[in-house]
Image 1: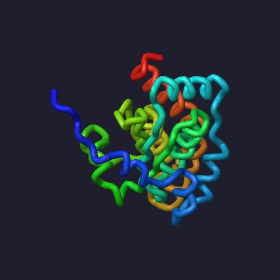
Image 2: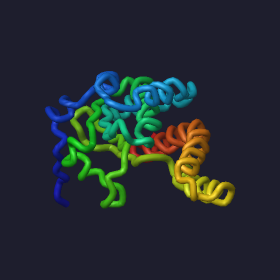
Image 3: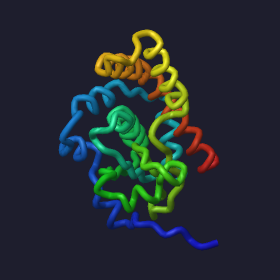
Image 4: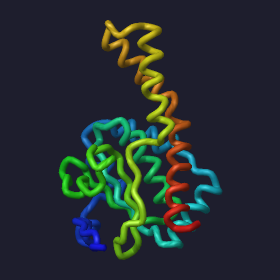
Length: 193
């Protein structure tokens, strides 16, 4: 089997932003990143698990994202909390300026869905990656949209979008918990934890 080639070399990984530096340079939604960072919670058991994952080899996390994307400003702060709790080195890359990296991690081999955390060993052997948002969010979002449409219709597009956004945001604390659960399951499987 041919070895997978990657554009994520040690030099490239080292050229990304730390999470704090990424937040400092973003142009939009800084308040939303801060809100979701402050609301993200890890249990003591979560912290212990992610530390074990780091000890088992997941020492680095690359994150692809964009500041304008709701899934990113809601999800990347959870990823940052995980990395901080575990002591993982983080390198954040704006997706639109790093399409060569993004192309290695397309959702279903086709979609440039973000955020994408990629877990690596010290020598940048990929352990696992994850896409965008938890499965529960993928299942609930269309239901929320349909419920709002049934209740208020979609003729007033601004009102429709505002209501969908409010209901989606109300679900995000539960989706943060699901994100942590899914990442735990993924790393547990890949690292035999």
